[in-house]
Length: 383
Image 1 (cartoon, rainbow, N blue to C red):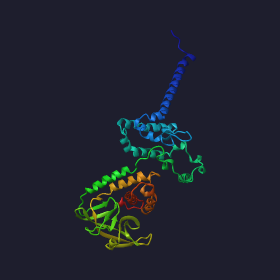
Image 2: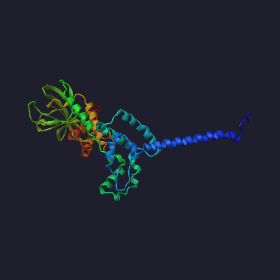
Image 3: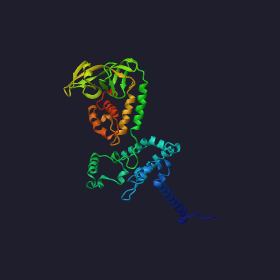
Image 4: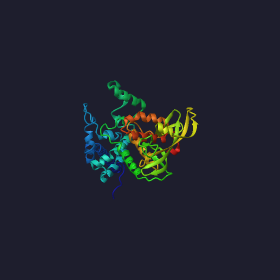
């Protein structure tokens, strides 16, 4: 009969099991950590032809790849957090990219270009949300010597630090080519314009101009007497082939007879008028703005416009306006909702910032109409 193990003999198998478990855990942890580090390497990131043939080639021309100091920032330095917790979360969220790889979402240069803006926005939004954490691993305001920067750079960096801006607000496109941020909203507007050309409205309908539209005071006149603003409402009175007889209604401010606005006290444009159009205005009522003591008169004007430039609903226009705001204005700062300013304040904001964009005059006019009609003090019906 075998005597039962006692004392040291009984504890030895347990110690052996614990030792094996510890060794196994260490090996597993080491293997996992090694795999994590391997997926952070430049070689791994460029093993996919979609990355190797597109953004990698752009990256090789940047200062992050080659510079006078000989310091190189690889993909993971900018796109993967260093601390273990955030890195693990980033790896898990990035696993969806494997699904897109298998689906071939960006497996050709054409597909990649079509997705470039969307892909860039994902990264810009992520970096803005974490205060450009990966950038700040190497760059920080605390370590900057503004006296060693150019006057322009020092002024911009000092202002950014004071305003609490984050790196990605200003430093987009430092390693990769910027996407065409206008392509999306221009394609959407082209579709809307095509739909407007096929619209067959009937008298009595309310229509909305999709762009600045010249009008005439008689159907057979050759010279325009003014211009209807984007998103301005008109009442359709008659249809004569490709000419529409419409009625404009808006408010004229004392001292500014050439402008017709949507609401008292708010310079949300309905139309601009020349001298001949001003003479044809029909006054309906006059009120005094309590904030300025200026008289505002509601006016009506019957005009003729070319067909094909109007829609029956505002929502498609507002969707394009929102996209213009989202795509263009976020190139320099976080998205500002229309409700962050009043209708009148947006005029100054748009005029000050439009020079930093690639927007056309028509696009700026539509953007301003969207922002003003969704401003903090906008009437609910205008939204």
